[in-house]
Image (cartoon, rainbow, N blue to C red; front, side, top):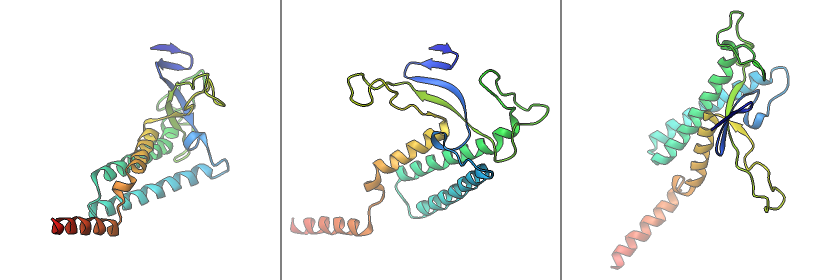
Length: 185
C-alpha cells in the first residue's frame, strides 16, 4: 500500500476523498433548485422502493430478490443522508484543506444541498494490445459504499431476472408438464 498526494493506493484500488456535487458519475442538475429537486427525487425513489419491497414481502418473493432490492434501498438511503447532512456538519474542503467536522460557524451548505463523499476507485488498466481503449482505466469512476450497494443490487436483479420474475403462466405450464410427465410414467 502506498500513500500519495491523491490518496491510498492498494493494488487494484485507490482510496480518494472526493466530494461529488450531484449523482452518479458526478452528473448534476446544475440550476438554482437542482440539488433540492435531486434530493426530492431520491426521497420519492426511496418511498417507491419501500412500497415495492413491502409488496415483494407480502407476495413471498424469492429471498435473492428481497436482498437485492434491499441493497438498492440501503444505498439510496445512504446517499440521501450524505447529501442532506454532510453540508450541515462539515466545513468546505479543498485539495489542500480537509473538511472540519462541526465548525464553529456552521457547515458549508444548507439541508439537502450538501455533497456526497466518494472514496473508492478501481485502478485496473486495459491491456495495451486492446484496440480503441488501450492503456485507459477500465472503470475510472470514483464511488462510495452506497453506490456499490446500489450497483450490486441492480446487478443481482439483472442476473437473476428470469428466476425472480417468473410469470404465473410459465409456472402453470411447468407444473402441468411435470404432472403430465408423472401421469405418463
